Length: 374
Image 1 (tube, rainbow, N blue to C red):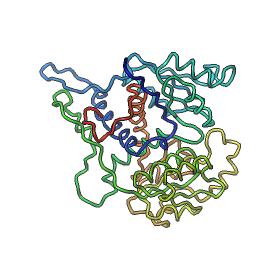
Image 2 (cartoon, rainbow, N blue to C red):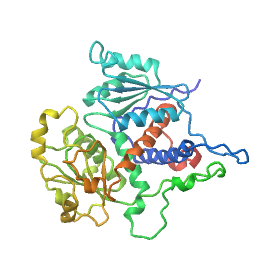
Image 3 (cartoon, rainbow, N blue to C red):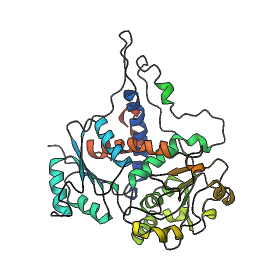
Image 4 (cartoon, helix red, strand yellow):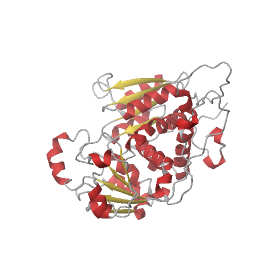
């Protein structure tokens, strides 16, 4: 009898080792390269032979429940489209669709949903909700967003930085980021070839200006472990909660973090400047106070110039964005990576679903895998 595979859950990147994070990033890049040619217009040419690689079909005949108690654009698009590409079925369950929180407990809900699906992707309010789902679910539970953590967003951010690593070096080396437009010009006649490996990313200075919320929290437990320096600015009353900072210290990440109140000081030497919403869902009643508290934190060319960011600094934002957080010049300008970052939510989500739900095997050292196995 085959050994029973433990049920893997993903609550935060703090739960993963550095090799596991790197495997997810490499697999995201692989999924993207393998899949994108299939999404191009397919023109039949009888004299040409098509030799494309199928993406993993690990979710064939499987259903993933999308348990969303908060509205979503990128997370829902990324999850539904990636499940389809993996051969599975996405079952969207909004808070108005099921009994959770009305007549049924998270414990009972986890067992019922887990008894009829093969995975749960949950976007919740309090982090305790998803912890309880994972505790009682017989199938993998992936955190699509909670009050404390947002792991899939940080995976997308890191993939984006890897793919744009050539922007952070002064060498004239040729950019090895795949040019999908050129790769797919003669898609029907191209020969079967190995995908490019994930571009290497050297140490960066990453600056975060804004509220200490779920996106920053997963950055705090991830970026320092990957060799990057974090510089954070937030008003003193908006700091990481104790349960988050405890994980930061346990992982030794606090040694790679500078934290203050001055946004200009935070962007000093920055390769990348990141911000997030100042008013998360559920905090609308605090809007007026928060806008006062974050006055002076808007990311602008002037802020980063005066603060001493590197000349070629880039900007990222998880979206949706409000103009108070970053002005149009930066957001829509050449420094912005926000839309490639948003696109990459699909490929990192696809990789998570493939490894955590489809294969349920996340124990392999990525250095021992061939490109085909990634």
